[in-house]
Each structure stands twice: as C-alpha cells, then as structure tokens.
Length: 410
Image 1 (tube, one colour):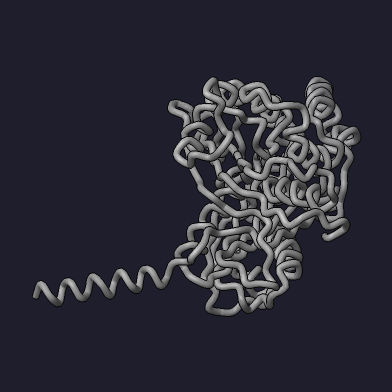
Image 2: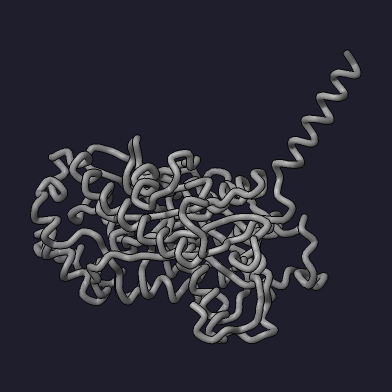
C-alpha cells in the first residue's frame, strides 16, 4: 500500500509539473474600442439636462457644471444617444421599472464593444482566434446567463471548447481582477492563451438628475462607454508572440470598515453606484501601506533607500476613476509630475470606463515606449493599481518588456 501511495504521489507531482508553464504570464497583445457617439465634457451638462428634460432643476445643473469643469475630462463616448433615451421614457421615470429594457440595450452594446476590442487584440497577437483556450469577460453593464461571454465567443469564432469565465459587477477593479485570473490560468495551464475582454456601457445606471441623490451627479459626470482587451499567456512562442508586460505578482487588500464607501446595487431601475466623498482621503491614508505589503516580499532592486520607498523609480498604471483619486495617489506616494500622465491622459480622452479603463492606460504606456516618448533608461518595473467596491485595492506588479524603440510600430 505504501509503495502504491508513493508511486501515485510521484505521478501526481509529474502531472502537476507538466501542467505548469515554465515562465511567468505576460500580456501578449492589447486592443481597445469605443462607440461612435462622442459628447464633449464642456457640452455634457446641457446635453444631459436636455435629454432628461430636467432644465428646470437649475441648482443641480449648476452643480453638474462645476463637477464637469473640475473632472479633468475633455470628452466621453457613449453607445446610447438622445434618440435611445427618447424611445425609453421609463429610463427617466423612477416610478417605472426599467431594468429589462436597459439590459436589452446594454447586452448588445457590451457584446459589440468587447468583440471589437478583442478582435483588435487578436489581430495584433498574430495567431488565429481558434488558438484562444480561455475567455474572461468582465462587465458592470449586464447580468444574465447565457451571457456576454457566449456572444463574444461566437462573434469572434472561438472554439466551442473554449473555457469561459464571467465577472459581473466588480466595479472599476474588474479589469485588473480579470487580468489577475488570466495570469493564474496561464501559469497553471501550459500552452494556454487567455483572452480578456472588458466592456462598459453606462446606460444601465443612466437616469434623470434626482434632488434626493445629488451624489449621483458625480458618476454621471465621470462614467463612459468603452472596451479593452488583452491576450495573456506564458512562454511566448518566437517569433510570432512578443510580450509587452510580464505579470509578476498580484495582491488585494480591503480596507476595514469601508464596506459602504463604494457600493453597487442592481434594482428595478437599473444599476446604482454609491461612492462616499471620503474615498480620496481613505486612499491617501492607506494606499502606501497596501503597496508596501504587495511589493516588499518581491525584493525588487532600488525600491527602497533605507529611508522609505522610492515610488518614483516605478512605472504607474493607476485606474483613473477620477481626478481626485489620481491626486490622492500623487500626494500619498510623493509622485513626480508626469508619473500618472498615462492615467490622466486616458481620463481626459475617454472618462472612466470602469473595467476597460486600466487596459487603455496600459495601451497608452506601451505606445509611449513604441513612439520613443520614454527615454531608454526609463524605469521598467511598474505597478497597476485599481480601486473596487469594499473599499478594495487591487495591485499587480509588472515588468515592461523592452526590445528597443520602434518608431510607429503600432
């Protein structure tokens, strides 16, 4: 019996070793997509109060104007239009249930946007879509089974045996959470190639301004539609596959007593976001401790000078949930001007697209490298950081793969 047990243990260990990749997971391709309808932020207040028939709410309109002026956003893109809202009066009347109608619209938007972003990632990757072994779809804009993952797989022509995972209602953190899951899959399933597709359509939370909920104006002034996609795999196959970011480690921390600081609830009138005004202060007081806990075990060189952590020696891919939150990161970590340039640029050009936004930031960082906007001796180690409901801070350490500047290599 002992001999049989020992032999079985050896076989199990051999099988386990054979299943694992030799090296760490890496992002092998990136794709993004936005809808066609663009609204400039300096015109958004007039547009929003017009389409919601709320121009009589003068004080709320003034408040919305101030929020938009301070947002750091220049323009946003939406799947829904004024015509969409006009066809659905239930979207503006809280006495009428509207969840079913909203989800019919957003289900199409999520599938279309996610597929467009994923198709661009696959084209950049250079291998056929049939080589995708796993699909992860993250969204805050619909909830149901069969879900967006099945539609995306069909639209892309993925194999019927592709292993699918859906992440619903994880807020801004769902993009990084999806990449974290993809990293684990890639490193524990030799030869796997994981397609991550994140998409957001703001219509599920869209509504008329409410004098009882003036805080809802903030998310209305920030959220936008868009999709981001990455392909994650380990042991890249030369010369077709070229790693962009090596995914080194992940961490997650939930701040005690902050369960109501950021919350998402799904009801008859759609999706409701609640964000406390204290969130920037909570982040400023806690983010450094969370980052130290995430990075200290790695023993990375030049991260600490004995007096503290040298956060300016890192690349930063911070989810631009809002201008105030980016300011909190800068203040808490003593970051130099320009360290969050990619995040601020994405916020300015697209707004907060929830799960998709962090992928836009990664795309912005790699394009700066390709366009030689970053110096050859620029730091290569980096941190992705995203906030989610809870209040939860998701962290991923990455290493930017450097193969020299290639002007125009997009």
